[in-house]
Length: 179
Image (cartoon, rainbow, N blue to C red; front, side, top):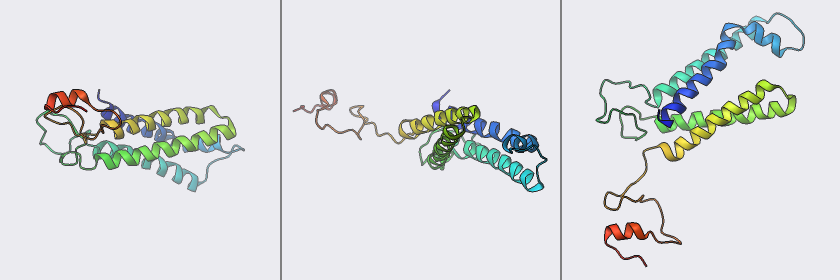
């Protein structure tokens, strides 16, 4: 499985996993967070379920907007999804990846701060998973997008510089002499 797909579906899965207890049992969530055992208020139940539904919605949007699930019946020749802006299947792939990367990074910092303050193990698990997804998302943004410029003549990446060393192999292929 491609790292791009892994990140997209992992983001949706992690958000759905976080949303499930918020939707299914807001009473347990409030009881765990409250210092005294009590029934949750109507407002607490509303906010808990609204947050759960929001997390699921953001996860689904991340999958749809990155092009992991084709929204049109037209497929590319290779049959795969790219992050190329000209690809009609995924025009919002890179912006959606950036937003989810910021989300995972923010949640990782927040849960880390809560973990160091309280020492609760569930915050450590949240920090671990959010950090892992943030790192994978950063890798996808940096290296997984199809905005690389590979020269057809030499096969070298055009975005690289020859400073302070020359690329002798690319110069051999193009017929130029390396200094």
